[in-house]
Length: 116
Length: 112
Image (cartoon, rainbow over all chains, first blue to last red; front, side):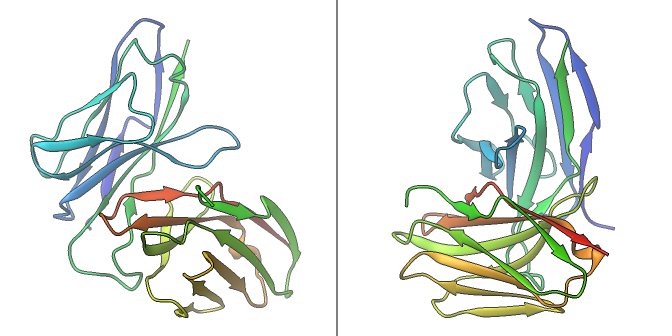
């Protein structure tokens, strides 16, 4: 079945360490996105990529980095420069033939990152 | 309106009752309005994508309307059931691409 896989589901990081969150899709979608959710807040866009080898900053890119070397993969690195990294991170993709909901996003199941 | 806003933040509905809630979005440079349902411990699931003023979409007991001139959309749940309990997200995109800006969500709890 096609979908998006995020790993790991839970991640603990020590302060000062970089950590990479994985996002893989087999939907043949061109565009991929990373969002962050904090308690009581909506999803905020970190980075997005509309095509391989290209990506753009979203609204809260500081302290994060991404790469898009393959169409299927869009890993997110949370660097030590991110002041408040504890959050829930969601990856999504879009593109391809429309579904019953048009060109809606397909989301992964998320990674909960905790800084200890 | 500069951001996407949803109201109320949460609501409790008795099983069998109907309910509705609002999404407000910037009406300038509007391209599309999305609705998603996000159940606990699951991934958000796309419900509707609407682009035209006056659009109405329906999926089972859930329907949505769109007013692009005044920048709002309503989501309706008819005859609410416990399985409708979820957070409902709306998001809008501008003409430049499909990058979505999300609202804070409306959390719906249907009580048996």
